[in-house]
Image (cartoon, rainbow, N blue to C red; front, top):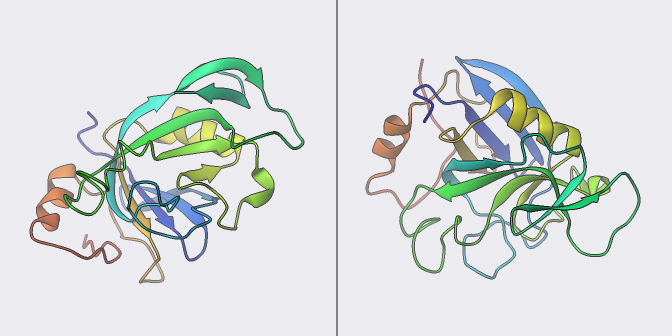
Length: 193
């Protein structure tokens, strides 16, 4: 696990994702969160809120647009145009919720719901809610995120922004987990340098 993980902020209100390392924004892109809104209940089709950790990065070495089924490459590659269904493409960043009862545990578990940050064949929907609960990115952005900026152990916060600028520095996992004890709500991260 990375001892000084990156911090990923997914802002559902602006449909954007940003990556922060050492207090600096190092990457940003458009996303598409759940068409059914924000929520953590299994089967809702909503994007879960709150603190998560990337549990696994899948797809290194696969071509841009490579399709995955059950986290395995199918051999199909999306290049453009409409497709049947909701293709998961290029890279998968599998998320594990960190907040018991909110996004971790029976009926709400982000990992068991197979919530990912992933590339999509529906790049036309980026910037607008349209997924079945995952956080979709363009294929190029999925490859950049997985191959250049993120790894297992990095922290992810998902929700509507409550501040104009994201936090000024990277958060260590133990700091995030320490803040979660006894909490039931998920405000945007309030992290001081």
